Each structure stands twice: as C-alpha cells, then as structure tokens.
Length: 508
Length: 80
Image 1: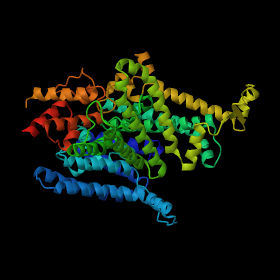
Image 2 (image 1 turned 90 degrees about the vertical axis):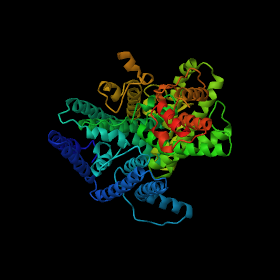
Image 3 (image 1 turned 30 degrees about the horizontal axis):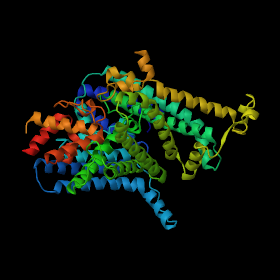
Image 4 (image 1 turned 180 degrees about the horizontal axis):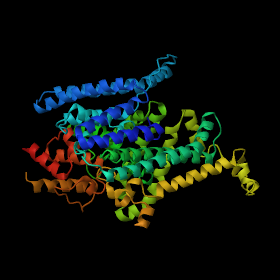
C-alpha cells in the first residue's frame, strides 16, 4: 500500500489512527501492539506472502540479537560475538541477495558466458533493502553495546513501523525506541497538526509535482530507448526533468513519512534536506537520503578507512593525516574506499548495470571533491573570499553533475542512457520544434545553429515550463521542515544558517 | 594524562588536519561545531590521535562518540 493511494488515505490511515488514539488513552502497551498489527496489515496488503518472509526474518534476527546481548553482558573476550555478528550480517545479506540480486546475477552470468539460462523470476518483497540495512545496523549496535535492552515487541515495532517501512528513512533503534516508550497518554493535537501539514506537503509534491512532470519527461526517455534522436535542448529538459521528478517523489515521500510518524507521537530522523541547493557533491550527499549516507558512512566507509589507515600505520606508510597527504595515501585511504562505498550504494539502489554505473560516477565525483578540498587551501588563503566566490560555481557544477548522473540512473537501458548523454553533450545537434520556430520567424535566421524538427511545439513548451517552475520551487522556496521548524518536524531539526533559501531570508 | 593535556593535543591535531589555527576544542565540542570537520576528517582525526597516543579505539566506539569529551574519556581509559 503506497501513501498516495485511496485505500491508505481514506481507510487504513483513519482506522489505524482512530484505534491508536483510543488505545493510547487506555494503555501504551495496547497502543504499541496495535501499531505492530496495523503495520503488518500495511505490509501484507500488497502481497500477503511477504509476511511469511519478514516474520521469520524478524524472529531469527531477534534471537541473534539476544545472543549478542548476552555475550556482551558476560564481557567475554572470545571471538564468539564477532562470529555471531558476522553470521547475522551474512544471513540478512543473503535474504537481500536472493530476492534482489538473484535475477541480476543470472543476467550477468548469461552476459559473461553468452548463455541463455532462465531462472524463476523472484519478486522483491517491499522495502526489503531498507529493512535489511536497518536490521544490520541494529545487530552491530547491539554488538557494540549501544543498545542495552530490548523486547520482541520493541524489535517488531522498530522494524515494522509503517511510516518508515517501505521507503525509509533508515532509522536507528536508539533514536526511535525512547520515543515509543514515552508516547503520550493524551491526545497530541500538535503532533497531529504537524503530521497533517507534512502529509499534505508530501502528497502535493508526489501527486501533483512528481507525477505531473513525469508525464512530460517519460515520453522523451521512451523515444530514446526506441532509438530516437534526442537533441541538445530536449535532452537537457529530459535530464533536469527526471532529476526533478525523482527529487519531488523522494522529497514528498520523506515529508509524508515524517508526517505520518508525527500522528503517532514519533519523530523520524531528517532524510531529505533540499539537496539541489547543495554547493558541492559532498554537501549533496549530506542532504540527499541523509539516513542512507549516515548508514554507509558509519557501518561501511568509516570502519574500512579506519582499518586501512591502521594497516598503513603498521607498515609505516604515509597516512592521510596532516596538511600534505601524498598521492598514494589519497588513493588508498580516500579514493578507493569512497568509490567502493558508492559502488555498494549503487548496487543497493537497484540490481542493474546502470545503478552500479551511477554509484561509481558519484564515487568519482566525491573523490574529485575531496581532492579539491585538499588542494584549495594551498591555492587560496582567504577562506571567506573563497566561499563567497566558489559558492555559486560549486552550486552550478554540483547541479550539472547530479543531473548528468541521474540520466544513468533513469535508463531504462544502457543504450537509452548513452543516447540521452550524447544529446546532452551536443553530439545529436541542436533542434527545436518547427511549429515553435516558424511563428517566431526563427527558422531561417537560426538555421545554421538550430535545426527545425517535426516534434510537438506544445509538448516542448509544457515540458520547459514544468522544468522551469519546479526548478524554481526546489531552489528558491524554503522546504517543509524549514516551514515547520518551530515544531521540530524531525528529530533535532534546526534551520542551518547556510541552508536558508533565498525566499526564506527575504520573508524573515 | 590529564583532560587538559589531551584537549591540547587534540586541538593541535585538528588544527593541523583542517589547517585552521582558530580551532579550540573543549569537552563539549561536537563535530558539527567545527567547520569542515566532516565524517572523513573525523576518521583522519581519530587515526592521528591513535598514532600520537599509541592507542587503538574500538571500531564501535568510534561511531558512538558524540562529543570531544567522549573521545577524551575513552582515550584516558585506553592510556590507563
């Protein structure tokens, strides 16, 4: 069940909330129990059989976590804890591997071996990518003694809580559970009002903006995958258009998730913070899918760099620390771990070559950004002047880089992506609809540069206007969390000075 | 080693790392209080501290330090 369906909005949500509100006045235990039951119904709605996958997985993970907890309590110095943790991570990754990647590995095998081996098509259980990462983080946290007690009910609620179940954010147990345990016994009018506000913003972004622009952008990608020629301007409209589509889709979904959680007296962590306003690609990843970046940094990148740095120390090789890292240290301690982490991120986003390419490209972007950060202080002594001068340039480069990569993310086939990218760099020439150029008397004047083609002028104008308006909304307006900042819409939210939008500064 | 001594060492390490002599660390300083102290520079900082003091933090601890004070406390324990 998606948040923007009638079943959800007019049946599931009102019923779940009404029962919850009554139960919370009677007993917190009953209210939380109801949230688990409702979340399971929410999950089962799409494919009931999914429950048969998620429930045993919850049970096994609960038992593993219990063992880890006991091992931590006895303070044993043996390696059993590490082995149990390793087994737990392997168990969760194999579930994800089976459901998400089996088909892809089979395709890859066929591509490499030139065979035509067909396997049964496995349907991906909803939200399994999010659930897997969340549970892995939980096991690591229990092992690291960052979680000191939990019950089966707590664990079920942590995994299944429906506002974050199918599309994130990826939450930590320690930031969620105290909130559930302290749910108010009285009607939380403020929570419901903020929830309704965020849900409405989110619905608008998803249903009106994202789905709206999608109608004008999708035909261009279809044309590209059918082998059509996409010229410069159309290619850029399609590329920026799709970036905006996914932006408002994700932003809308994050708003809805945050709003729904507030109905039940709970704040989710910040997951989406106007990423297109970013002034560098590092900044972009601190704003786009914040909880995924947080997960990958804490559980993959940092341990990897820590391990590599220490290994280099033992061998007495130069480290990254200090003002002048050497090139070799930069590659082994920064470039390689960054690109590997983004490779995993790409693979996590979807089982396919294009997702991997997208991840690797962002890995490369981040590496370049980090290298630049190391070089700049040597070239530019005055930091303030540098930031003043570079902010607009950084913004522009980041925007273009993100849009460029998004074309690869979109696909749907490598050929379509290549066609689109060729158009974007001008290999397919520049053209505009003849019906648009003719009334403006531009056909003969512009002929040497801009070719007049037979595409629809109306469709071109519509798509351009959508792109223009949505870009303005994304870049100039304050976001939902800035607007509701007084009510702490997500955990610990504070408006960052350097994040304030132009209009926000103007209005306040 | 005393808290003050450790804070001085930490401050020097971070000043060198970020090339910013204006940084002053206290027990309460958090990462987002210091400009450019991102997750990558954080790991660099941790490794530099390990090198300087000849200690090794637990990987799980590295992720749970919330403030400079937490790192100082953990380092004190490890030095013994």
